[in-house]
Every structure is written in C-alpha cells, then in structure tokens.
Length: 428
Image (tube, rainbow, N blue to C red; front, side, top):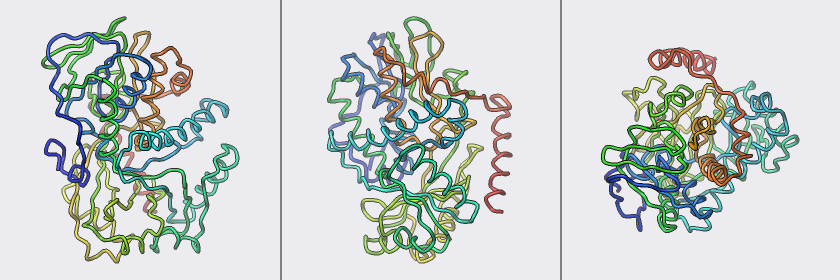
C-alpha cells in the first residue's frame, strides 16, 4: 500500500519498486524543458523528449500518478468523449480522420509502452458500450456504421440482444458495440511503470513541488514554494489540478468529481460468469455507469459524478445499489474500496491542446474521461512540437473551445443545473 496516495484499490495494489521518493525542488534551476505534472501526460512528454535529446525536469505537486492518472476507471479507449461528429463539423472530414487515427495511435502507444518497458499493469483486451433502450441502439448503430466504414476502423462489432451473453450476463441491456483493440488496465501501475522508464532515461524529477506561479515570456519561469525553474520550453500537464495557474486555460475546463468502488475478490470463475470476455463496459447514458474486472478478479464499478465538487455522502452504498441493478447476483459481495478524483471536461467534450500565444508554453487538458489513452498521445505531440514538428498539435489547436458560462464563481451552479437535465433525460 502506498501511504502518500489516496486510499483506493489501486494504491493498495500499487508497485513503485525502483522509484525512490523524489525530493522537492530547491533553489533556482535551469533546464531545456520543464514539465508541470507527474501524470501520464507529463511522463509521456518527458519520455519522448529524452528520446529527442532534450534535458528535462518534471515537477509534480504530490506524488507521481497521484491524480487522475492513478485513480481512473482504467479504460483505454479510441475516439474522443465528444465523438467524431462535432470534430468533423469544425475541421472537415480529412482532419477529423487524422484525429481519429491519432486516437487509435494513443491506444497503440499504451500497448507499446507496456511491451517495451515490461509494465505489469493487468492489461486486458476489449471494451464495449452497451445500450439500455432503443434510442441508445439507434445511436450506437449509426456510430458503428460511421466508424467502421467512413473512418475505416475494423475492430468494432455490433451485438444484438441475443448475442449479449458472450459479453455480459445482465438483463439491463438490449445490445452493444464492442471494440477489441481498446482495453483496460491498472492505471496507477501503468503510470508508475512509465515513470520508471522516465527516471531510467535521465529525467530530473521533483515530487511535492506544486507550481504556484508562472512567468510567461521567451524563457518561461515557474515557481514553487522552495524553488524556481527557468526553461526554454514549458509543458503544462496538470489538467484538472492546475487550478488558476493560467486563468485563460482554467476557464475552458471544469473539474468534475468521479467515483469508483471495488468489490472483494470474487474469483475468476464467478466474475467470468458475469463478464465472459473480461471486457470493460460502459452504458450509453449521458451520465453513465462503467465497470470492469481487475487482474485479481474483483469488479470495479464507477458511475456517480459530482459537478459541484462535493463528494456524495453515501458514495459506497450509492454505487453498490447501481451495481446491483446490473448484477443482482452480487448481493452478497462486499465493497472493499471506494474512492474518487477529479477529471477535467470541456464544454464540447473535445480535448483542448495547444500553445499559449507565441510563448514556448504548451498545454494539454480537457480529456473529458478519455485520458488513459489520449494523455500518452498528448505528451508525444507536444514533444514533437517542441522539436519543430507542430503539424499534429496544430490540428488540435484549430478546435474551438468556449469558456464555461458564469465565470469562475457561477459556472459550477450552471453546470449542475445542466446535468440535472441530462440525468432526467437518461431516466426518461
């Protein structure tokens, strides 16, 4: 059990061997590239930059993988939270197809990292979206046809109700679309495995070094409580945990609480009766439930979200009730862990990647629940841009993003009201 991390199934089963505790930043330092954030975005960027020959320093406010990278549902998915329609409407089909292909590359990057660095993170092939009502299946069939044919992605399969028993044993659903190339894993162990590769490559790492202020310009400077770093290039990879460090970025994302529970060990035989293929599953509601098996044969179940930033008071029991609607046979299964964390969403649920004006400052945020794969891609394409190859980052930069209405203080109540509408729509 990692004591410096929020208590969860992941921290209870984490493997940080080969990674010492890294000291806080001290004094004034200079470096080629400074990276803010020790999650997957920052680590993937650091790894690529070292391959390109840069000297790199990474600053993490808590511990490596402490935020969303080490607490998520662990689903590694193609596509984007907004799906491809809004992206195509903004950019046209050719650039939308490039972004689709990059989302596939993001999943391949995860697979490659696991293989190259021998990361023990309980990878399983397969993810699926399941429909609860005819409206869902109409949308899923349209998506299946579009992605399979126009976007030329061969890994999808459309299941009707009679085929569902090979995927899931539950009477809640009437069909599903499966993706055999996507998958799921232990996110904290993946992140720590990536961190070990970064550490071995020679990146300078400082934990417990939260950045408190930023001086913009031709040579940016970041400050912590105990030091500062001047750099030729700066990457901001803190996502939901950056706070108001850069107000114009903060206005484009909303931190949202998301929550998960884990059962006790159920055993492989019992769990495979519920999920024969061991796929990760999410439903097609706007405010969705999602669940998956673990490497030691538990069921992880997530689904409650907090748009107000306040954790639900009955987190464990509330998610258990939702789990039992899907799998009534788990009435005797104990819940051993319950935890939450923050993800950042954009207004349109599209990712927000780019550069701050003409300054050598790059950012990636707004993964909107698709971060386990896309953070790997974001780190890579920001490293490419620093190296003078910005074409891929520029495509993301053309996506238009609105600020959340209501400003810093009123945007949360506005979003809570909007989500009440979508929850009612899901129920109806």
